[in-house]
Length: 219
Length: 219
Image (cartoon, rainbow over the protein chains, first blue to last red):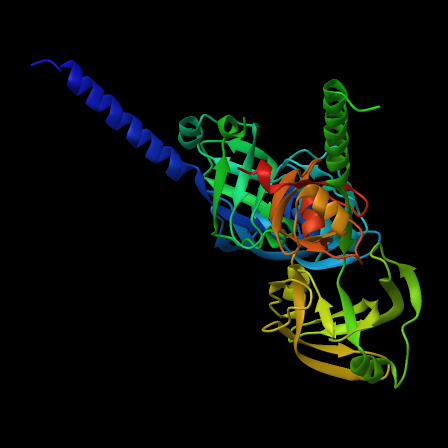
């Protein structure tokens, strides 16, 4: 028995309704607010916490495999220092310090707003650990606000890695943030990342649901 | 000699062009970023700086008659304190402390987001001056972001006191902020006021030009 024209239309309408609903769900993403933190390379881990030392798991982050460690460091700038900055694991290829612009003023540095890993021309900083200090010439950034997406979610929303989109926040300090970087990887789960300045400016907290504004809506 | 129909049309077109240009200029307003600060009443001034003491002029603010004083205070909360908080003059009828939400975390208080003067249910705080301390039960707010307008500018833009509008910020951290309070008074000059959390979240600085988004554009 074949499928007649009416049934085809019905199936098409159903598929469209399901896709619309899926897109609406997918574009509502949980917020993760990042306080200042440090990613370490093996060499700096050795220098700061001792040869061959390992990070101690403290709590899992939403992104698979990523975790907050028990270890903390003092971040020292020309003007001031910030104690107990959390180290995040696992270790990376390059040490990277992520601070807010407020932290930058307190430290006396000017962190550029950058995607993770883009350290050329970033701010110099000294890291102070229990077993030693490390001076880094280019190391500190203010994280470019971004949304992590798995490939399926990105495909459903028609979004690609490195694209810039907008985010809509409700509440007392309702706002639309532009220039939000989309990052797509099979290792990601959907999550919006803001720093503390941004979260406080919006009265937003980790776990809040944020709405992605898709490029097609901004015309 | 009378005015003919052609001349009337010409004058009308000219008037419309001038009004459009004026509105465009008027809606581009300079930003003033407020760090934490304190407004004092006479009684608290006496208690903190000595009987009959007066504020010492340090620098003029953009709003006529308002000034930063040489005097500073320590703001103390349950958890921490913030030193050297600037006192603004002149004295007011009620003492009011304006802090950011970041400051609130550092102090261990939860300042509500409020218009200036709306202190009911605001956060308790202790002020520490060179001559004494004052405990205030309801005193600390996070300032509701707002734009000061003189009546002529407000009329030109079709805006009224207490209305909520949006603000458009360009640059790296481009954004639209909603829920911005319009305040109209003959004592005001046009100026947008944000706190430091908001300014840092937007990479914005005092003197930046901000664009008012008028309600008619948000339909």
